Length: 617
Image (cartoon, rainbow, N blue to C red; front, side):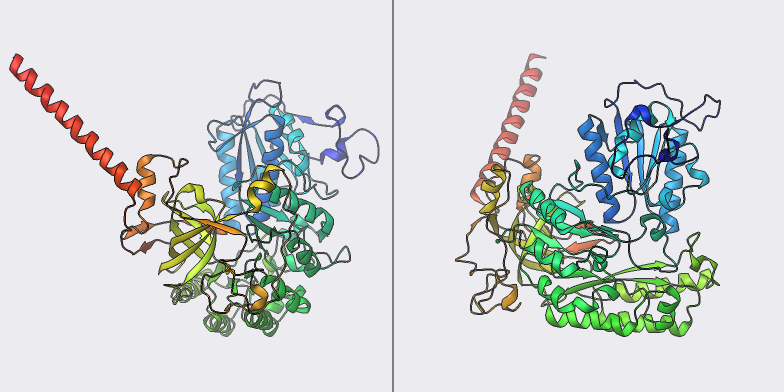
């Protein structure tokens, strides 16, 4: 079917960014048929009263798109549900990076059709492969048309098939948004990229580089800080390429954003994935930003292979030596720097020697996070036409590299250290809260849910392979929170780097000179800073129930099996937390005593009633 813009009456369509009135939009009404796979629902024609189920695949950029679409639908009156069975319409936001994610999409589409539910498919799959058989008979919204999702949903609920795929202006950043995590704002700084990797299908969907202006991004940062966001993730297909299409660069943007962050580091910035070519010329400037107390000392830099021959076949536009320069420079200039990377195993033409070079690179740097993937040929890409490595060899290499990586112990030596963490989510075990250090190391703590969205000083009690466990020593209540949010505007004081080498580090309570270097310190010592600290063990009226609250008060549960999710994806590992049971406070003892007395009273009543019954008989 043609794009909806091609069906509008009159030549030329509409100017970029112009919202077409529904009466002027050309549609393809669904005809009645006896095919049970095609939904033929009789829903109310009143828009905005139905329930929508949204499923998202893929990267943080996709997640941001889903949050924007959810925000618009919610603002129009639609209800959002996590239950597909309860929903009147399904909205699937897809990913085209790997075959498994697209296969999962195919399965979900088939399930939706079998349930006879109206369906809208968004994201990179329909944008990059609009003629897929699986997309026949369903409505589609493109990656740069998410600001019109309400129109598509309205018409789909009426039984029409709608397709919006033409690229126009970038979607506005101030659209309504429903965040998956209310403390985390995923901020897309650009769409598309400047690369032409031979294996990449995403370029077909996201297209050439298109950057948002610095003013629009800074404005969005100020808005989300006023909304109470505590982490801002900069997201794009290649963060390092930002601004090259509009005459600016990434360091300029980063400095402009950092200048707006609260000075007490109550809101942290995380820089998104960047490929090596476009940050080589800005390494010192980026290192300076990463040292800032309001910025996580963490960066995702994909290498994909340790062989120059393979990188050349991938058309990655850098060498292994240049990747080493990026890692070595940032590690040298940024204390506590953590770097994550990606590896593709079994790219067409990869020899045993090529793979050995990749293994050697990973062993040398012992990256704390490595995303290992087998090569998947994506239709329409040059790599799909190359001679493939046998699948059994690809799987063997993937297993070998995974085994090597999982043997690393990146967090050994952290036990006993005091760290400042930022807490933003609940672990899937329902007991631990998830926080991150300045270096974005995941820390699991037992604490009341009221600590979500706060910062704390913790003592690392034990370390695992994928995360560390901590005990909260003190919480940090930021002075800008109440006054700023009450007035719905960010604090007038802005974040600025420390220039006094004598002052102690804002990331640690230790009085000795800051181990992070003077540039990463806050404006004052911890004791003198404009921050008030309270014990984590105050009564928590927001806890879900009494028993849960008491469980959280046990600071370290002996041999408690933990499963949790990291921000970038599923943990996929189980760990054992070791420690000793903390002492109970006065309130704990009083509550426990009350429970015990109540239990004895109930037992006494039961015995009394039993005796009376027997006596009467």
